[in-house]
Length: 577
Image 1 (cartoon, rainbow, N blue to C red):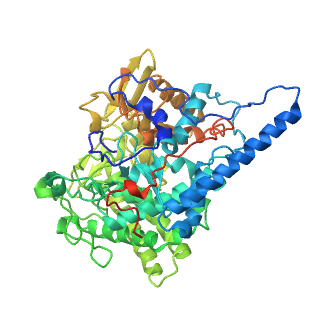
Image 2: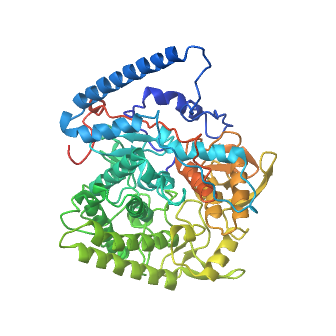
Image 3: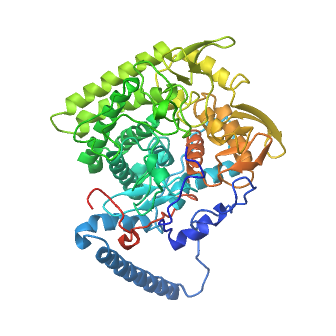
């Protein structure tokens, strides 16, 4: 989870038409926010008016349409000439043009799945879902040339590998009328495939980094360079879950768009190979193992991972080999205390099995069998390590999953709202022990969990949930909306899902958006008013209950774009430049 004080490059240029949409994010994070409920692009409106002269109206319409089409052709021609490669890039230009053509979006059918015994969602909850679902596309998605897409986090204009993949995940899950939204909309397909290409580029650039800039124009200080930051790298935190999200995105995109040529590109395969080999090396972090080979030619490669703020001169606290993969940082971007983050390793098991399934289908080359075998072997070893070292006897709740362990007997019993978390285990797709997970869930939602909070406020009524140490300095008794969303996504009780959805609406404190965290006793005291990962999780939760999000009133969206190469001062758009 990116921190709000991360350095921001001044090179990011937002389109003029997005300025109005971003005005509501200019307040301070700890103040009450007032956000317009009309955040989406203009909704479909019936503009027809009664008139006695229908023929006159028809001629007006015909002339208007003719002029519009002529202007569109002129605009498209100008774009073709302006982009690098000119006519040779016509296919991508057409895709970009289709993304900005919002007058006639696909018609999403409204087929509501509902158990009559389940309480109906409020209009506020459904309206918020419509806004939250498109929030990433409306305010953080930048369509680049050469088939790429850049998605930043919100109020931090850098791309986190984890956040970006999580932000677009709702359009990949097959919860909308039995299918994924990405399979119904060529604009969404272009955006997601572009993010896959861009993420592959970043992993190839430096597989240890977790967050990246859109270009290399930022001037780093010597202290920042000492922390592994340079050119495209925003933060150089090795976080195991980052590549897990990338693997999940590949799998879900394949399920929805199996014929996509992007999935079969060498850069995508190389990114997968790089991360599998890196994870294998980090099983032996204590012995200073590191991956080598022609794909590991980055500036920070060729030596054991060290980060200045970690103990033991950057190596981290002592660990023993367990079969699990070591990580320097949690999904909150906080430092790992015991080295082996159990929920992240669970996610890795699932992600590796995605690769085992995808590899022989997507990549036809001599080493594909070896890649699949390595991925399966690694998944088995991690899983064995979790079962042997990741389960701890709790004096009240019995055997539970630990949050972190070191393989030496040390462990951390808590949960952090950032996903992967212990609460999110079923959501991740991990094959867990039901009894141990039930014990763990009970522990998480109790005072035994140091991040658990209870509170009460006139806007929310009584509320309970848990947060993260990450924002404890700003909001001591913090609850994170994403923890409530994941609690809803992992329950089998639809009534409980609905209760949590309505509670999340109230916890937004009238702003209309999810926040990073809020005070358990005052939702108007919150951090990060523009945090699209949480918005996407909320939308995903609502979509797990009903097909009313999106609907005919929510199927218009605009996509931010920045594709003028003149605005990149010595920047890097893709591996082709």
